Structure formats: C-alpha cells, structure tokens
Length: 143
Length: 144
Image (cartoon, rainbow over all chains, first blue to last red; front, side, top):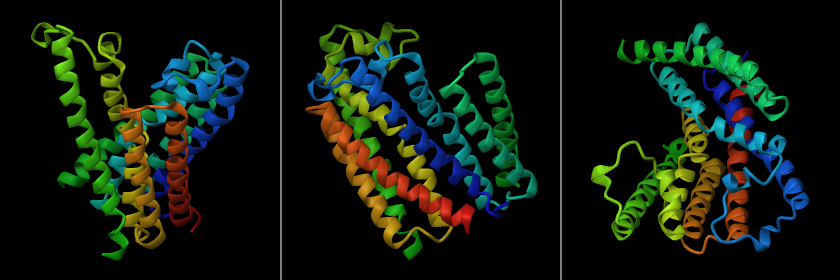
C-alpha cells in the first residue's frame, strides 16, 4: 500500500475524470439517437436539460459524476487536514482507502444496475468511513 | 517555493469564483426587483427556483457559479496534493494555469453568448488538463 495518505485522494480524483469520460462516451451516442444536434442547441443548454430526453441508463453516469463532486470534496479536505497535522496513521490510511474503494463500487453500481437499496448501503458505508476520518481530523488538528 | 508554484493558479481560480459570485448577485438582485419578487417574504426557496422566473442571461451567471463549485473542487484537491508532495512546480504548474485560464474563458462564454458547442469545447480542454494533473498525482502518490 502506498505510504501517503494523499494517495487514495489522487485515485478518487482520477476516477472522477474517468467517470466524466464515461459520461461523454455514452451521452453523445444517446444524443445522436434522440436526434439532438449540439451545434443547433439553443444558447444556455445544460446537462440537466437532458434529464427528460435521454434514457435513464445514460443519465445515471452523469448522476454519478455529479455525486462525485459532492461528498468527496469533504474527503479531500479532511485527508489534507490529516496529512498536514500528523494524522496519517494505519487507521486513517485504511479508512481513506476503504472510502475510495467504496466510492468506485458506488459509481459502478449507480452507472449500471442502480438498485437503490444496494446503492444506499454502499453510500452509507462510505459515509461511515468519512465520518470516522472527520472525527480523527478534528482530534489531529486540535490536538 | 518552486514546488508551490501551483498555488498561484489555485488562488486565482478561487478569486475568480468569488468574482462570479459578485457578478451573480449584481445581476440577480436587480432582476428580482424587476420581476417584483420580494425576498423579505420568501421562505425556503433555492436559487434553482429562479430559473422559472428570471431571464436566462441572469440565471447563466448562477449556472456558472454552481459549475465552479463542481469540477474545480477536484482541481483544488489535486493541486494541493501535488504541492504537498513536492510536485507543484514546472509542468504541473503550467498545466494548472492552463486549467484556470480555460475555466475563466468557460465562465465568460457561459455568462454571455452561452453557445453550447463553444462551452463544451472549452470544458473538454479544461477537463483534459485536469486529467493530466490527476494522472501525475496518481503516478506520484500511488505508482511511485
């Protein structure tokens, strides 16, 4: 396992852009099928406007990309706090890697099968890791 | 110091986000007054609700401000990690400047003409720059 507590964050950042690639790879085909010509799109159109136009399976990739720009931003901040305040331990590194692995599984699930109870369970487990990291970050930074 | 060169573009994009915040309210508040919306009596609304009532050009500022709170958060995390890991100078700093310059152009397009193809082209280029930074962070922290 890489020694730095910043390694899992680097993996998650890279994964986020891989998901963006997946969005692009599926969205353009779906837009072509739906008869949408991007060149003729009215000014100001956004990804959310495709919600009612493209098939759910296509939009799920984009839902997950957006999801990756929500809670993980806390993860980046918390792991940076821990790294900078001597909070990099086997425990925090283990929690951080678990968080990232769970978020990648969460992405794969949301982008394909997307059954809610399973997605929720993965999300809850990941959140539990982040919660623990946040508590440890408060201890490390105040201590 | 050289390894911290990447913090220049980080600070620039953060400041630019605050400028967009000002631009958003500088156009939104007069537009709300023109639309006879009395914010003093509002309970529980969100900015999204204004998409239905304010002119698109006004909401485009808000769309872009929100956009700046999305992908750039990954940029901040990766740039800080690169700086801490001693990889925030040279090529990485230049790529970061390219990302920030592209994001500023992206903002200016989205809040003015907002042609989807132009915006997409600039966003795609910026994403490639960020991808390069992520790849460098991955190689530095994980593969190394």
